[in-house]
Every structure is written in structure tokens, then in C-alpha cells.
Length: 396
Ligand SMILES: Cc1cc2nc3c(=O)[nH]c(=O)nc-3n(C[C@H](O)[C@H](O)[C@H](O)COP(=O)(O)OP(=O)(O)OC[C@H]3O[C@@H](n4cnc5c(N)ncnc54)[C@H](O)[C@@H]3O)c2cc1C
Image: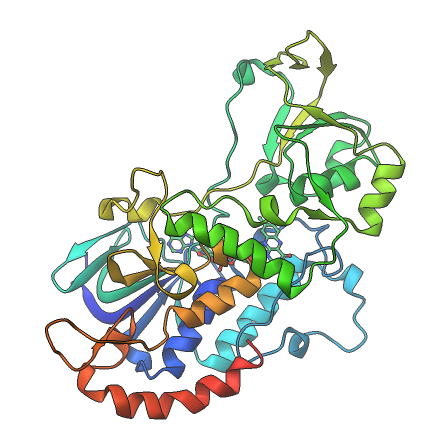
């Protein structure tokens, strides 16, 4: 292994959250050569690279601009959004963003573990390691699909797959497909598959569709609830569990053809289908688990961040900072697990905060600012940094 290279801040993950954090760190004055951005994928785009081909710019929930560059900059003026795959357009956008921001992301580089090191952290991959005074972890959740265990799962003779491996309805033509899960992905899959196959929908709790328009106030209320949970050290839960599933014309059409009749969860999986507690059975060729993802944080396990509540106690503005560890930020985690949340959190994790110390130090800097500005430069740096911040606030 090569000797460790030392950085002020290592950003792990170059999706929406990591790119946003990198942008704000640079705007706040972190010298470019003191920051390292690592990403395990082969190219730009974060998890969007892998989203299924039928997810287009007209069927995504909405992609928020990265700070300082509009998504529309990479879209042709006449592009038909329903024909543009999210898995192509968003990587194209991120690639252009990295180019314009002059961000040299080191990829593919998978961080295997992050441990304590004198004055900070040691970030380890298979062949190289780096030290850093601060870490922004922005590894999303795509790498950790979650499939609940049901008795008999290993005996099922058909095909089982997770949303992560879904490539579109054409794979299921004329088959019997059981879709499991109560979130937007499940409803999207059913809407598509029910047009070519027989679908059955099973969810643990009744899905909650919402007629409410998704306004900024609705978004803020949802984020506030998830934020409350992570501040209390609880696992975050999903934003959609708070907002509900917004109705749209595609879902209405699926409902009209009877595809959104939901059943409670089955009790067991059999060789040729699923079985409910009351004895009812459904034959199936496929079980599609649209059961969500967990945060991809395994590489942080040496830091022992999880507490008794099963989650990680978060603190700081927008709850991006691991409580008690001001130089460790999780962006895109919990309340910031959306493109807009990731953006805001990317900025919050880098904001300058002045804290009066009990010991009489005039100013201590919280969070990653301690890495960005040496304390003696605080006032000068702040004066320099603020205009740039304001310029971007309206667009981020
Ligand atoms: C199916 C689906 C649809 C969604 N649709 C929307 C939507 O329409 N609008 C919206 O706002 N949100 C949507 N979301 C949520 C969405 O995932 C987030 O909004 C956002 O894209 C996540 O950005 P991120 O940067 O946190 O994570 P990601 O985009 O997942 O980026 C994480 C990056 O970290 C890298 N990485 C992971 N582990 C490591 C490691 N150990 N070492 C190095 N690199 C690592 C990955 O390669 C990846 O590039 C959707 C989520 C899903 C699952």
C-alpha cells in the first residue's frame, strides 16, 4: 500500500450530496488541493447511473439543480422529457458539473473503512489510504438494497429481484408478478408492469396516497419529522413515509384498471407463490421487492456511530453533523435524502459557525469550518466567503 496522503477534508461519494458539499467547501475557501473526493462508481452520476431505463425525466419526482449550475444547461431546448432516461441525462449533468467546477473525483475508489487517526480520520480503500481532518460522507443508499426475510424465500422456484435490479416491465410480459412495498418505487413498478403482466401488490401497512400538492411547506414538514428522529438517534425512516405518495395521472390510470388494489403482507413464500395467514394463496413467477434501501454506511462501522436507538445521533444545522463529532458529516442521510435536501445539507455542513467557548477562547469554529479556515483567519475568511455564498443561495 502507498503511504497515506493527507487532506483537510475527504468527501466520500460524488452523487448529488457529495458534489454539493464539495462545491460549498471550495466556495468557503478550502484550497482545492486540500480536498479529496472519492467515488466507487466508474463515472459521474451517483446512483442515477443505475436507475432503470424506463425512469425518465417525466417520471422522476423532480431533480433539484446542483448549486451553481442549472440542470437545463445540459438539456437540449426541444428535448422530450418523457423520452430522456434519468440514467443518461443526470450522469451527463453531473459530468458537466464536475468539469465546470474543476472537481477531480478519484474513481473508481471504494472506501472500505474509515477509522480514527491522530487529528482526524483514516480513509482506507483496497490499495490506498488517506488521512483527513474532516469527513463528508455522502454515500447514499443505492449500494444497500433492503429485502425483508420471509419464511420459504429460499424455496421459491421463480425469480426474486429488488428495485435495484429492475430494468423495466418488458422482463415480465405475461407473468404473474407479486410486488412488495408501499413506496413510490413499488407504485411505479406496478403502474408499468400491470400493463403487460398480472400483478399482485402486498404492503406491510396500507399505502398513503396524497392529493396534497407537493409544496415547499409540505416538503419542509416532512424533513422536519425525519430530522427530529435522527436528532433523537433513531433510524431516519423514509421521507415518503411522511409525505405520502402523490397522485399523478399515471397512478390514477393504474388505479382505474384495478392495479392498485393492495393486500396486506403475506405470511410465507412457497415454492410457487406466496401464502397469507388466512390460507389464501397467490401463484407467482416473480417477486419484486420494492422494499427500499438502507444508508450505505458500513465503511463507517469502525467509528461505532450507532447508538441505543439503532440510529446515529445527528446534530448541527439541518442535522448533518454526527453528534459529538463536529468534523464528521453525513450528507444525503435522513432528512437530506433527496436531491434538494442533499443540496441544502451540502451547504449546511460547511457553514461557518462561531461558538463562544467556556474557556474564554474568543472563537472556536464548529464542524468542517475548522478544517476550512484556521481559527485566526476566521473573520477575514468569512468576509471573503459570504458574497460567493449569497450568489449561490438563490439557485441552490
Ligand atoms: C428509485 C429512486 C428514485 C429516486 N428519485 C428521486 C427523485 O426523483 N428526486 C429526488 O430528489 N430524489 C430521488 N431519490 C432519492 C435520491 O436517491 C436522492 O435524492 C439523491 O439522488 C441521492 O444522492 P446522494 O448523493 O445522497 O446519493 P447517490 O446518488 O447514491 O450517490 C452516492 C455515491 O457514493 C458512492 N459510494 C457509495 N458507497 C461508497 C464507498 N464505500 N466508497 C466510495 N464511494 C461510495 C456511489 O458510487 C455514488 O456515486 C430516489 C431514490 C431512489 C432509490
